[in-house]
Image 1 (spheres, rainbow, N blue to C red):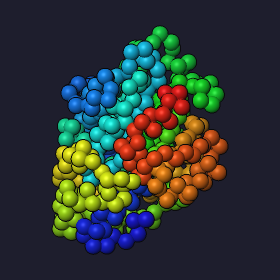
Image 2 (tube, rainbow, N blue to C red):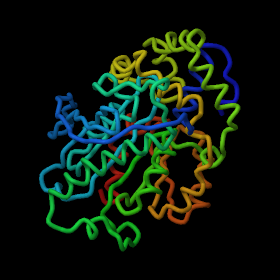
Image 3 (cartoon, rainbow, N blue to C red):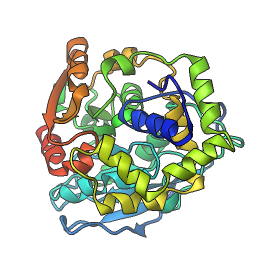
Image 4 (cartoon, helix red, strand yellow):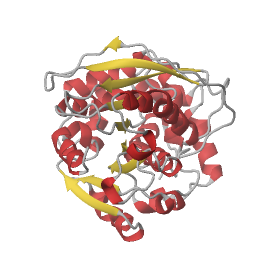
Length: 361
C-alpha cells in the first residue's frame, strides 16, 4: 500500500482511503512541555441518549487539545472508562465517534480525544511541522496518555473510594481487571496497539475496528517510499491542488460511498467532514497518508501486550479473511463480524455498543 503516489487528486484520494482503512507510522523530530486543565464547551448530540456529549480542552506539551466527553449514566460513575481513537483523513476528527457515543445510553465515562493536529473545528491547535516535529505514532500516543493521566484517571478516582492499584488490576487475570477499554478505528490501529503496550496497568482491553490486515500492521514501509510520499503530499503545488480537489463535498461523498460505507453515506457525515476540511487540518492527514504510521512493524507490541484484543470487521469488508492471523498469532485475540464496511462505529453504532457491553464496559 502507498506504493505509488500517482497523479494529483486520484493518488491522494487512494492513499487517503487506503491509509484510512489500513495504517501507517513515523514522523519527524522534537517535542515540547505539559500542563492540563479542561474547559467545557457545548457540543450538540443526537437525541438517542439523555446524556449530552461535551467538548472539553486540555494541554499537552505546547498543544491546546480537545476531546469529546460523555459523562457516565447514573449508577455507572464508578465503572471503567472507554477511550476512543478516531481515524485520520480529510475532514475527520473525534466527531467520528459522536454516533456511537449517542447510541450508548447506559454508558460508563467515554472520552474521544482529538489527535494532535486534528479537531481544528473544535478549537484545537493546528500542527505546523516546520515549527514542531512529531514522532508517529508516538506523539499521538503521548497526547492520549496525557489525557488519561491528567483527566481520565483523576475523574475516575473521584468517583470511588477504592485504591487506584486495585481498581486498575495490577494482579490482572484475563478480563477481570478494571482498566480502560481502548477502541481504535482503521489505520490508527498502531496508536491503539502502542498505547496498550505502554500502559498495561491502566488499559485492560483493546478493540480494533476495521484495522489493517495482520501483514500490513507487521510489515514496515521502506523509508525511501515514506519520504517520497510525504514530499508529494506536502508539495505546495501538486499536493495543494490535490487537497483542494478532494476537500470538496462531492468528492468526499463519492469516495465515502465507494470505499467506506456499505450503503451510502449520510448528510450528517458530509456536514461533519465539511467543518474539518480546512487548510490548517491538512498536516496530520499528510503525515498519515504518506504512511508514517507504518515505518516499523508492530508485531512485537501486539505479542507482548497482555490485554485481550478484539478485531472487528464489517460484513462487506473483503479484508476480513486477511485478519485471521491476528487470532492465529496472538494468545488472547478474537475476531468478529458485524454489518457495515469500513466505518463500523458510524455505520453500525448499536452493534459496536453491544460488543463493548460483551467486554464488560
